[in-house]
Image (cartoon, rainbow over all chains, first blue to last red; front, side, top):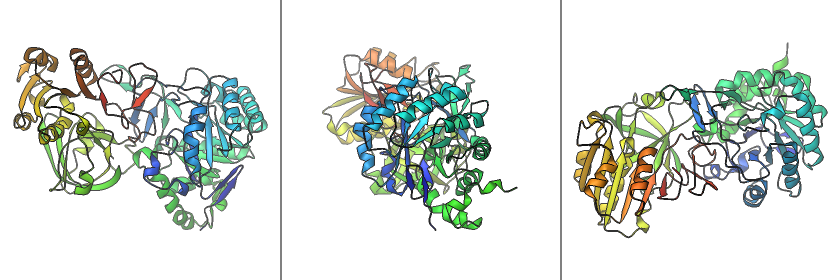
Length: 303
Length: 255
């Protein structure tokens, strides 16, 4: 069975890719399997300059999930282009670059830096990071602001731009429509939900940032609902994410309306998860009566 | 580093909430392990625990294809681990991190200082140092008498001092008090334990050369997620504890 799917800027061998922030730039996972097996890779968020991120503890386990508040630690876009992307070029692997910023100008500057190279295939515009004081999620929760940052990043990009939506928005459909009208080529959703865990012994939030982003199977129903609603409201493709662990989860995302999916937290429990899902997906599609991936997309909308 | 599915040979409680796990690991994989490295264990195969648990390597027996891990039950995940029995399987990444690179060091005497669940990795380290002909002095500290473990094992390898915070066993006080009282002679020190202890040791032994092993809540355990970082002394960059560490030179990172 062919798992191939074509999206703006992306010729995917299969619809499975690691989610941004959970896979760094691929190096560590390349010791377990050939990265060329993946549909694509979403690399760790790039900002204009190096960022050290938040204090530790930065992660906490929760029931069927985890909270993280890394705080966008990254070496800066120029070092990523210089040191990380050439390594990824050695694989047959579409690269989706996640870009973040504190100001619209910073987003533009990161996009411009990538524009000078031919090392990426698409941009994932991160207007939904909940773990930084400035920028991040505030760009993703107000439709007018989401529109503006999308429009301006599009101007400085020679590759398709996918906008990563925040589940923390009051109405995710209105954000999706706003970024579509600003020229977004696709959507990725959902980013993490803000959450908190309190340390009973210390009587204070466990994460040093207090608040973190909740990910993992615990948020999957939220992601499915949001993709289901957004799929009906927009005409651009969706890459779905949020707690995927099994091939049935992948199919559920496709049925809700995702054209491809990203796997995040599950890489920590099982570093082989993406490869295993790619191997298991054909049997699951077949079991539920699908001949290929394309047929399954949006198939959960039959009344 | 390998991802393996292996079997438990025995599981024993050796002190309060402290469990020793002997597991089967093939000799050729054991050959690659350095003292101070750890394994990253999956807790069950359901979605309940999405994060693995880092557990330090206490000992290994190459001919017997056996690895010994010692951990403390600190939460739900480690308690679940303790419910496993002989022949149950265990999924782990092995070996993780950079250990103590003792092959590159010239010395005749070493001081090992461990606190609580920081004690186990020092045991395999002590054995490897003795193989090299190094004299080993160990200071191990615990909260209370019921927490003490491996005293006899360390006594067999050299001089061993035990301290308890409440004085219910051994010397009353902290490991640093023993350093002060006994003034042990050494070329390098090796410390593993909670951060306040490591900080106190680094200050007390500021003119000496040594290594500190750190712990932190981890995400991926392989260097990809940037969860378990520690700033360098100049605070201009971060080191990843799971990948660059858990062992660092004294003065290398800001504890």
